[in-house]
Amino acid sequence: MTIAFTPSDTAPADAAPGDTASAGAAGAAHVPAMAQEPEFWEPSAPEPREEPGAPAERHEQQGADAPSGDGDSDSDSDSDSDSDSDSDDLGQEHDPVVVRDALDFGVYARTGGWTFALKVARSVRPGGQAAEGTARTKVSAKAFARLAGCSPERVMRYYKAWDMAADDGLVPQFEVLVPGADIELPEADVWLSYYTSRNGASSVRGQAITAAAEAEGIRPTKALEVAENPTALRAAILADPGTAEAARGALLDRMKEDPALQTEMARAIARTDDLKKAVASEAKAADRIGYVRQIVENGQIKTPAGQTVEAPAELRAEAERHLSLLDELDDSEEAGEWAGEAYDTVKGLVAKAVEEDPALRVQERRTKFYNSLQKATKVFEELTLDEVMEEDIYEADMLQRLEALQEAIGTCISALRKATTTS
Image (cartoon, rainbow, N blue to C red; front, side, top):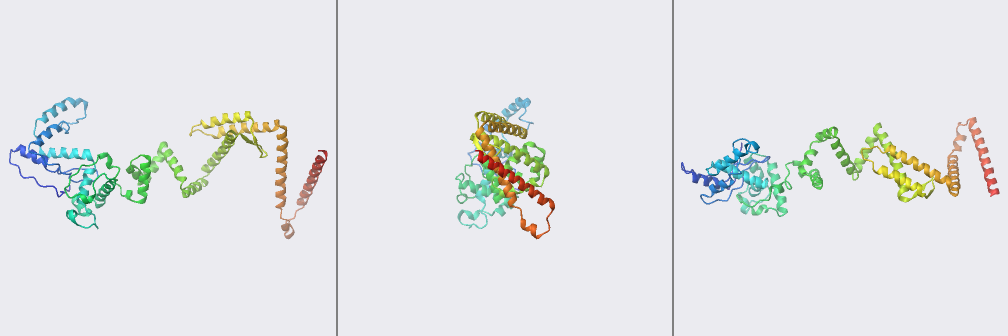
């Protein structure tokens, strides 16, 4: 174990044998020698000196809160015996080492990481800063880390956390802190808002992850941990449906603002036959649901020939009924079958409405005939007669088909002229 001393630490004078009160006072006034934190070990801040005799009173007040050495103090079956033991401790003198441990524990329980951040803030002067005034006695982060037995990067994470808190006015700036200075520290719960134990948090990627985690209301360290272990994330997605669902939702949200990811996902789906079929099926169901929804929301129908007319009340009511059933489906339920039923029902009602309206029926047939004529004209216009003349592609049945087509066109023309004369 590596032990480091802050400039404020002073060695206590040797107490005379049997001088219990002096030993207690020296133990209470002396800085707690050691404290341990999950990532960074450093001596805790010095406690204010007290008048002789005061430590004993304070120890008696804290005796009920100090951990006992008689097994598990949280056990219900031992609660009575623990209470008796605590009562006995109140009237006893305590080992100064135990007292220092208890005081150090209390300081850390109240302030958490701020205890160690203060030691860094008042003792560290990163390289590049001038050693002037109170900064003359401060050391570099590298030297401080060497004394503490940890890495300079870890020291600087505490330094940066204090710097951000100082910018927010939560703690004093580094310039006003001198080695050994003691101040009132913020609550322990606030520490996690400024400190992260991960190197990636300072990168652009880490800052983006931290911001997203804060927006979701979770600790940034959790999100950073997941981002640093993609294999663990993959295992969780493969094994747990809930995690897979969360990942699906996150990917969909991400794709809305990431065209490159959209392209990659589309390419992956197109290259996988099962996914391609599933997408086609879902697209067909979506189109059918859209057809029904359009009737409900706009009050109009589109006829088979492509006309858009007002929807009859009966048809619109039936479309609303089917749409309500579709909207009530859970995300886990297949909508394809329900969408097909709704579409077929509404489509049949549209055809019935067209047949029952004489004017609409005539207009529908006229539109259908004209659409077919347009298609035939376009196809004939696309025939390239130059290629027939230049290359030997002629076959006897080609001429026969054209002659039959000419006869059909003549018959059609005669029928239309006759209808025109009659009308």
